[in-house]
Image (tube, rainbow, N blue to C red; front, side, top):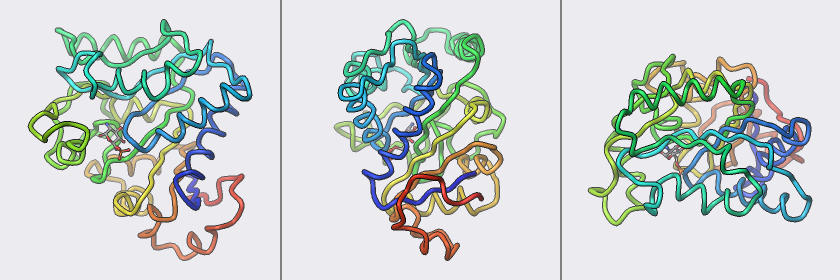
Amino acid sequence: MLLHVVKDYEAMSREAARLVADRLRSKPSLVLGLATGSTPLGVYRELIRMHIEEGLDFSKVTTFNLDEYVGLPPQHEQSYHHFMDEAFFRHVNVDRRYVHIPDGMASDIEGFCDWYEEEIRRHGGIDVQILGIGANGHIAFNEPGSSLGSRTRIKTLTERTIRDNARFFNSAEEVPRYAITMGIGTVMDARELVLLATGVEKAEAVRAAVEGPITAMVPASILQMHRRAYVIVDEAAASRLSCQYVRELTGLPTTEPRLRR
Ligand code: GLP
C-alpha cells in the first residue's frame, strides 16, 4: 500500500487523474475501473480537462463500474448509469460499446453477476481501479462483513450507507435497499488500485483501513494486501492516522507516493 497525503480535495483529484492519464498514455486500450460517489467527481473533471485541453484519448478504453443500485433504471437520476453519463462519459470520447455498469434491472441477477465477472476476465482484467470509501469502511457496496474473497453479487445496504446516500434522494425511504457490486476479490484482482478519501468524515475509515487490522468488518483494510494500492487522501481524511511522519510530510510537493505502508 502506498499512502499519499495531499493538501486538499483538488490536489487529491489532480494526483489521481495524473496517475490514470499516465497509465492511459502508455496503454491506450486501458481497462479502467470506475467508481461513483462525490469523491471521484474531481478526478473526472480533471480527466475531462485533460481530454479537452491535452487531447487525452479515451476511444480505446474499456470501463467497468463497481456497482449499481438494484431497481433503478439507467435513466433514473440517482442511478449510477446516469451519474457516470453526467459526470464523465458524455464529456469524453469513451466508446459506449466498451462501457460496463452493473444492470440494476437484470431479471436474473445471479446470471448477470457471473456474466460481469466473465466480461472483466475476457477483457484481460482491470488495469486501474478507482475506489472511494464509505464512512463505515466499505468499498464499492461491499459493506462490513463482506467476504474478503467475494465476487460480483447482490448485497443489502447497511442503515449507515442508506443514511449517508440519502442526501442524493428526496428521503432515506427512496434509497434502494440492494445493490449489485463487484466483490472484494474482484476489486483485489485489479492490477492497480487508487483509493481516494477526502474530509474529516472519512478520517476514521481511513485510519481503520490503513492502520487497523485486516478485517471483513472494514472491507477497505484488505488493500493492505495489494501490491499496488495507492491511497490518496487529503489532510482532513488523514487526520486520525497515528503515524507522526504522515503529518510531517504533508505540504511537500506531491509528485511521488510518499509512504510505503
Ligand atoms: C457509495 C458507493 C461507493 C462510494 C461511497 C462513498 O456507497 N457505492 O463506491 O465509495 O458511496 O461515497 P462518497 O464519495 O460520496 O462519500
